[in-house]
Length: 151
Image 1 (cartoon, one colour):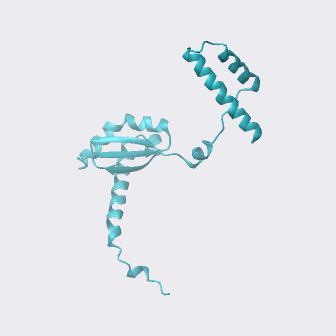
Image 2: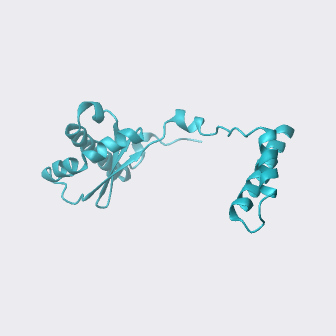
Image 3: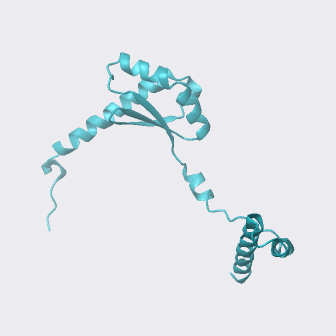
């Protein structure tokens, strides 16, 4: 089986993608020039979708800082001919570290606390919504504690 050389492929279909990436990089440079240096380093990507510009950052605290400059960013982009952009949205990208940390298990109360909760909820009135909620909570905690012990 013979393989086609890369030079023989028609690469013109990639040209719009290359142009779009170049535009996004140019917009990101403008955004970073508007922002103070300590904030600019946390603006990692941007994407245009219709009339909205989405700017991506690495944490919620930096996102709020970037949002503070959203009018300045849009004004600067309009000065440079990007008059179609009317809205700036800041989004947070999850890092690999935080994605692996999410799977942490909750700590259950002790068996004595669960039993006490069940006992107190059973002694309440049957029509009391709080007693019903405590009863369901106690039953759920009991099931999870038993599953943790057996597993």
